[in-house]
Length: 360
Image 1: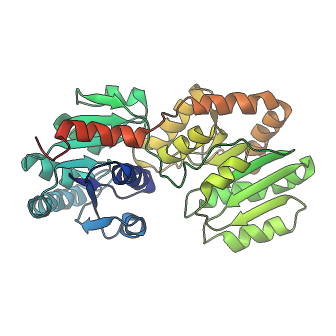
Image 2: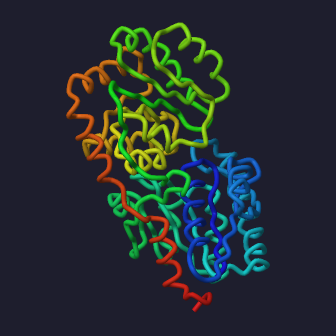
């Protein structure tokens, strides 16, 4: 069976797609997975680094632009559908899995026109425009949050959870040792706002004492942030990037991060209490809606990007220090969001529908 996965734009679309591809690769049988994405997106470097073949199409985001831009985007969409239809005719996939985002739009439409079974995965609480539109054409739609179903047009919707890469799923033994450990990160490239908040918070953490900090800064702010830590007596580990996120999740009690879907389900996997500072410019305010859902479920606190200061975030940390039972309770609540084996579930649904030998 040959599976085309369309995943691009952000890590929130790309990494779950890679997780499903890994699931297909680990299954018994003959499964060939390849990806379609854009040259300018993160997928152009990330997907090949995992050993999967990546083919390119042109695609543009539709929202938040001028009328002229939208008209040009529509022309790009028509061109992209034509290109994808030719690509599908050449590659002859048995199924197409769209991971959401504007990259998926021409691929999915071309698949529908070509008569290929199309499947979708939606990572966020409220689906983006692409999946809202495309869901009516999909054979099945897989969702990370059960609440997403009410926004979608498809009738065959399955709550599978969010696929996680093998590199993240490396055991979940609980942290040992005394004192509170905090893991701060804003994605692989870092987040200037989160870095600034952390630096503002350093004197308060130092005064409180007994706190360790692990901080992924991104490349741009690394030297500045590390220099600020050097001037304190805090036990810290500051780094621009790590491939071993799982190790830091396991060593931490509380995580301070953005609120992308992949991050939230990594937190859920490791059952970590969180202080979420949603990225304010995410399409459709997806991160805010994800974070609000987590807070309602008791898995973390939400602090708006504009309200996030060192003093404000420290108040939340101090509250957890003074109420240690809350950390465990919030971690358990966060863990309740995790659905085990999402990547295998999605692969199995596709195989069962299409048939192990290809299209049926």
